[in-house]
Length: 153
Image 1: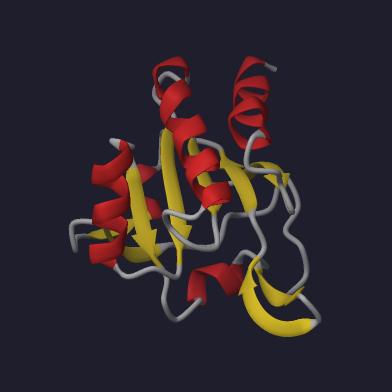
Image 2: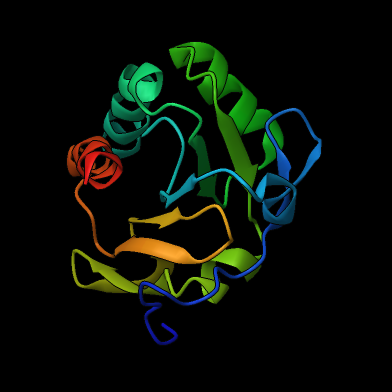
């Protein structure tokens, strides 16, 4: 895992395919706040809890853009979006380039077996492209709560 990013730092650039196969760039969203959250795998229990929690508060975040990123390919992201009517952008990072830039691609361990994967994390980026809030190893249920608290703060 690369060094953790900190509030005030410039957010690493993002240019990835979304669930519809269109390229989405973070730079195109300047002037708006953006929540970027990284999750390990679409349609798994924790990732579904996290994504549906964000869907459920989307009407409370004003002009803030919500973007989820995982290693899943666009067709799987499309199915995940359709199944849960998420209604926000899901980006595909199969080469882990953006995940590595944000320091969330790391060695993990399950049942004693080590493997590389996504460390569930979220980042609130301000209107100028700087990191406003950083939440590494965030719990799925805390992501929406953290976002609302940061926006209210």
